[in-house]
Image: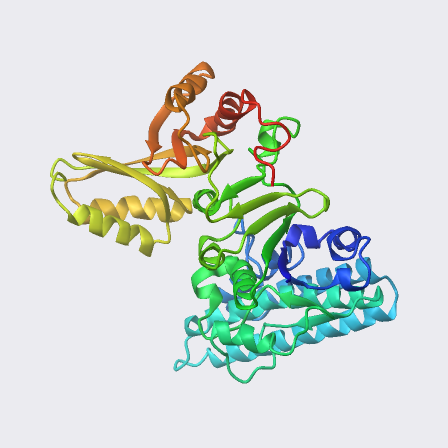
Length: 476
């Protein structure tokens, strides 16, 4: 019986601590094994390789996609090489291990640089279009980050006496890509987890092209697929924090508690708000095979963390977490001719999808529909213009809003709606819209963007702090 465990990028940047906690700690001999680790790139590396996840600042990929010459992206790739070699020095100092680590990543980057230069030159001819190859370039660049961290991890573990094995799923020397499942099966065909510790790249090169569908959520798909294909007893994600009742940076570390237990419905609601415990499509496989997912703090190895399972439902109705999404736009479309006209429900979602605007929620009445969307201001402004052109009689307004949600596996809390509205009103916060589904797992409040943090604190105080949850809401 083995576990499959994923380590995020921020945690990987504290690798020396990981060696003393989850990777080795006080384990010896057979206790070190029966664990498969899927690793992300070190914190910040994927931002440098692609683009900054939050600010959109261009990395190597973004510069290459818009480049007219090599210098536009070559310097950015040099910066990546420099940062990776700095990480190697921080980990290994002036040792033979560092020489090995440097040689590995220097060769990878040199290969990538040559491929990108040749591709750019090829696409200077009219018969070849760069856009046809950009997704492959994006995948190739992303794979460097995971290969770097996985290879370093194996070097460090072997130095410490652990029989670690690198499983590079990036397909670097592969003649042609295999289907996703076949790639996993083939890679693990001769692995004996009872005697060796596989360290696996978070990126998997496959026919389906993970980035095409999941973009930067690909490592969770790799993690989930390995767990299901190898029949893991448990899947574990190690983060730098616990899955708590709210963001401690907003509410205060002393006021939040670890959730302890919840279900995949709750995990999906968090994902919808951009606070992924796990990507919903990655959770699907675990859910179908009844594999429990444990979210742990990588630096508190003795804490049980939070277990997410398929059939869990809190015996006592309660709010388990206050979460939200602070930077959203409300696209309000009013049209007197909307009543009974189905094309609005068909064409508006299609348009928003084409603009890559993520719809978090929507509400409607007889002659108006409001979509609460996440995306760039540029795309939202474009949506306003296109909606106006498509529906000539419509009035389209744009508002800056935030969503604050009360979420739980059993949200049938008596009087929760009244307590929620009262808590926000007492804090001087105006509710713009309110949503509660019949499934009773989430209640969403739409507030002004500037009121987001105040609303989180107000609801956490009213719905969680005033309840007696102890150190965890439900013991794992």
